[in-house]
Image (tube, rainbow, N blue to C red; front, top):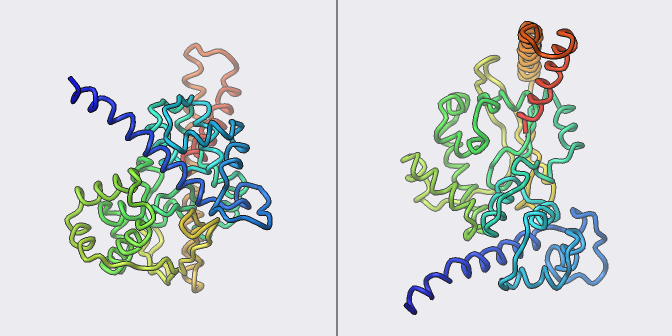
Length: 331
C-alpha cells in the first residue's frame, strides 16, 4: 500500500517541478526590452524578475514565486494564458505549458506573441524577397507568400511539419529544391545540436529529435557524429519547381536573444534570381485570384438553395472570409 501511494504522487510532483523549471527557463531568456519594461541600472537577474512576470501576467508575486518553487497550488487556464503571453511563448511552448499544468488550452490557436501584426506586415512588404520568422527549434512561425512556395507548398502541410529539419529529411519536394542536399542536411543537424544544448530537458525539443530519429535513418547517421554548426547565413542555390534556379543570400536577423526567434530572409544575389522571385510572386498572386474567382462563382449557387440574404452579398462575404482564412493559414 505504501508503494502505491508513493507511486501515485510521483507524477504530480514531477509535473510541478518540470513546470517550475520551464517557467524559470522562459523567464530568464526574455530581456526587459522585449517585454516593454525599462532595464534599470542594477539588474543582476538574467532575463525578467519574478515580480515583472507577475506584473505582466496580473497575478500576485507570492503566488507566482510559489509556482516557480513547485509548490502544490492550483493554476487556472486563464492564468496560464496570461503567463504564456507574458513569457512570449510560441505555439509549441504554449501547448507544453498547458500540458505540464494539466489544463486544457482555452485558445489553442493563439498566435505567437513574438509574431506581431507589424512583423506580419513587414513580411508582406518584403515581397518578393522570401522571408519568414523561425524559432530556435527551426519551426516556421510565419512567412510571406514567396517563402511559402520557395522550397515546397508550406500552406499545404500540417503545422507540426513546418520545420526546416523535418522537411529537409522527409519531404521530397523540399529536398528536390535543395541543390546541395548532403551539405544542408549536415549543417541543419549540426545547428540543431548546437541550439539544443540549452533545451535538453524540454519535451518539445526531445519530441522533435525522437520524431526525426524515427522517420529518417539519414538523420540518425548524421546525428550520431555529434557535429555542431553555428547560425551564420550563407549563399543558397535553390531549384524552385516553378521558376527554376535561384541564387539567394540567407540572413538571420534576431528578434531577441540569439536563442530566440529570428527573421530569416533570402535576398536575390543577381538579376536572374530577382526576376525569378518576382515571377514566383506573380504566379502565386495569379493562383490566389483564380481561387477567389472560383469561390465567388460557387457561393451564389449555394446561396440560391435557400440561404438567407442576397446572393451577391453572400458571395462577397464568402470571398472576404476565404481571404482572411488564407492569411491565417500563412502563419
